[in-house]
Amino acid sequence: MSEFSDGRERVLTVGVAVARSGRLANLGDPLDFAMTLMEEKLAGAGSVGHRIRLASRDTRSSAEGARQAVDELVRDEDAKIILTLAGTRVLPAVADACEAVGVPCLSSAFPWQVYYYGRGADDNRPFDWTYHFCWGLDDIAHTFADLWERVDGRKHTVGCLWNDGPQGTWSRHPEHGFAPAARARGHDLLQPEPYREPATALDAHVTAFRDAEADIVTSAATGQDLALFRAQAAESGWRPRLITCSRWLAYPPSVTSTGGQPAQAGVGTLAYWTPAHPYVSSLDGMTAAELAEAYEQRTGRQWLQPLGLAYALFEVAAHALTTADDPTDRRSLAVALGSSRLRTIVGVLDWTAGPVANVATVPLAGGQWQEGTRHDYELAVVTSGQVDGLPVGGDLISG
Image (cartoon, rainbow, N blue to C red; front, side):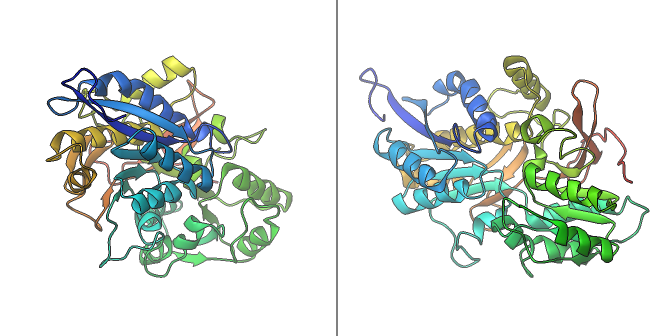
């Protein structure tokens, strides 16, 4: 809680809303791990006369649990700022709850158009309390188009396997989504009716893509739904030359495999953070490679892309707490977040540059899940995209 711990030092609490149970529990690992690493490092990172403390609550992988987590962090822990990561329904619920009670919130791992326009903001009416850093749906489209154009060096008819949730809906948006950016690159998009998630049958999509000779498929599906699509495509005797997929497919196969060949095998995806990214932490100088290695050594599991985003959440929170005019005042902290420009372990995050108020962007490169040496499947960087200084680690493999 926010209190004088020894008569002189005030403790400032950073609240963390993290999935520890429910369907997103595995995907809460990066934030949980980053919090463990940061507890000691942040203890001495506050303003003069203040100490930073971390407190967390389980979102239980649900919107209701997310709202309860925010309520408890504010009421019971006196959190001055709340951090969260990932979850198509959970992240917006955390942010909306923070907006409602008037506490600064910082989040990531969610395309910024879905976060911003999907929660009701517009260019003339930004949020008061909630801030975010991520890539955009248009950035995904350009990254995937870089991959598509490596297949025979031409433009393609691309089958779009969209769900009926927020990311699928906004990917189809005629102005703010994935579709206009992909079409601007000269590709034709075939967009059948969206499927309900989790999918039970995707044979209609398989038939539509096969009949239209769409040799590339793109999606934002879960590993489970993409595995179903690939199985039904194989049963029909048809296979696309390349699949590109964002969202859960940025995680290693050990997280989303449904048995047999993992859904990610050969899939092109986003490379937003890897051990090869040329970035260091603003707090302690830790490199991307060192963070990935620390995760593997301590957990025995394969590194995860969201590790970088999770670590950067704490970097930005510490920056706001040390630069705010009054770090004990939530409004002052919100102002500090909105004026932040910081070099982090995921690159430069700059809220003064937009693209809209409340949002800073993360650059993307193109990756593909290929058979590896240390792990069964590893994310190979196949295009450096928007990331200056990122080495390409492999060639794109297509059918």
